[in-house]
Length: 261
Length: 246
Ligand SMILES: Nc1ncnc2c1ncn2[C@@H]1O[C@H](COP(=O)(O)OP(=O)(O)OP(=O)(O)O)[C@@H](O)[C@H]1O
Ligand SMILES: [Mg+2]
Image 1 (tube, rainbow over the protein chains, first blue to last red):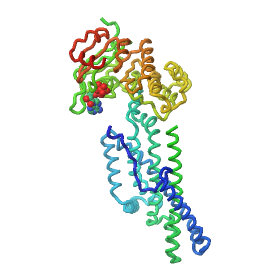
Image 2 (image 1 turned 90 degrees about the vertical axis):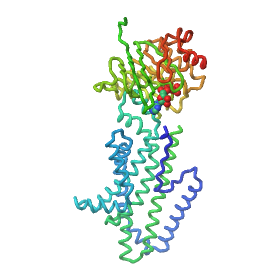
Image 3 (image 1 turned 120 degrees about the horizontal axis):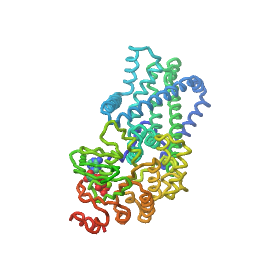
Image 4 (image 1 turned 45 degrees about the horizontal axis):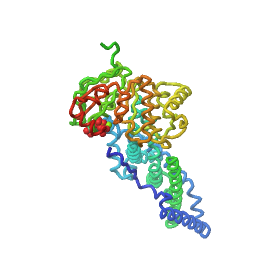
């Protein structure tokens, strides 16, 4: 019964501009318009190097999104398994899932990235991008597992009992009754993790994946325009996360509307 | 003497939660079509007893046979047995993400492999029977407590159970809604359903019960037909309890 009060708060994504938080909402508009203004100013008044730089980066932006989306898919799958494992009554399954979560959460992402990249390299030669996706997916899967677990546990136990009493077994209950209700609780923190993951993909630039940051570094090391390059890269990341957090806030709005019905 | 076998046979059941004994040497038989009302003070084990009948609670020793199936027999599929035993909860527990109609058709379609159209037809009949046919496409949050509980009863009936268990079905309801739920239960009783009902509604017990079971401290202290039970209770404990609630 004490498990009823569940707060899902995995706050390393971005500040979500929820309508009830007036301060944050204004801050969102200020940041968004301000960033756009700075970008416009730079492109119009200093087309060299900014326009040149901007043309150099799209490949990197695509790679960043590819890595993010592939990693989040892997993380969702692992997260669902880890979450179900963590609430499983089977001791072994539970232990495996908990150990996975425990270990992954205890190691910095960058170290994991190196480790999986080089350890994997010893066994099989995989493309850099695949190694990056595996590392990010495993890491975020552990966090996602906690989100799934909390989401599942936030559903009133009476729902499970009603389902069991009708003759559904435990996995049918999970599939037809619990998960369809839990996803509404799970979606906001998953969106948050998505944004956090997008930012963390910048780490993969270290292992030779040509994401935004690595493309920028290539540009900078040829042109020696470090300040200009990182200014633009920061602006691009900021714009992406601002837009994503706004989308997320709108989706949440829709969901809560649905809930009130 | 009985020509028919009991549909529920509970013998010398003990149930523990950790080291706490919730049921002590409980025995009870229910004949097909019989209506049993279970009463007793809070914490006396009424819910636990009811929940052992469809094994939502496991027993520590003793035996329970439901419609010929021994619950502790590992070769028996508990999910199949549960299909035969409908349960109605104090807190309704309707599936909140589904319409009323879907609440009723989910189990028949998924478990009994009924055609969707056939399941929906049956569901609509049941909803009409409990008086909420007009709410078929609503979601549970849009219904009053009384309506939700009537839907919950219909949902259990949709599986054509042989037995219906009720755990304080009217305790969470506003007083003006209790009657509409009890009416449905009385109708069901008249139709010959086997029912085990935990309730504080003594009027219902008097009117409907074939026998009343009084529990205290995890034991069954007294089993008697309602006339005898209410007018000539044997145990001192029963008398005190009845005085408190009547
Ligand atoms: N899951 C559990 N874990 C530990 N103790 C439990 C559990 N379920 C019930 N109990 C205890 O067992 C005893 C009997 O509980 P039960 O719910 O069967 O009582 P009840 O007669 O239904 O009471 P009420 O009228 O309040 O519903 C109580 O003391 C209760 O605290
Ligand atoms: Mg109870």
